[in-house]
Image (cartoon, rainbow, N blue to C red; front, side, top):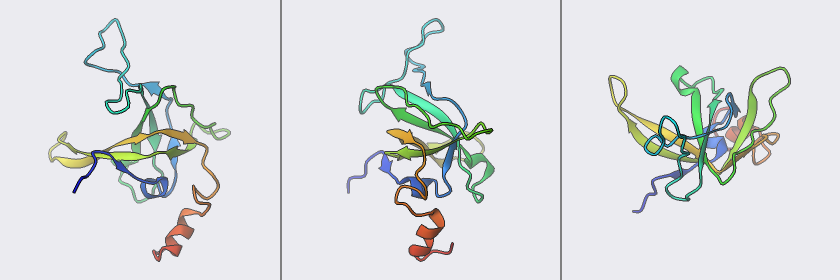
Length: 147
């Protein structure tokens, strides 16, 4: 059985209640190659593209407090442009494209736990009802899950 290091997931599976960007998109610092005087941007090992990152928020009411904030990384040739913020709010609703998760062992803290690194190939303004035109609750009811 061949399991890739990165696992593809859908927006609906990872963020059933949507997602919001709460920070700007910024280049990822390569700590091994950067110096105090010279910033060097990290490059994706698989594609060779520069890495960018943005901080986001998962509004899932069942998510634990520490799991609501996330960092999304992008491996793209140009800096990704986030969707517009909602009028009067600092948050930007976002739909990620080409989502992948990489599981790893987080040994920070008293007990090690499995954590996930998040990547996307792009982002856009959310489409009404998600990628397939249905609200998350409608998709759950269609799949036989409780809404």
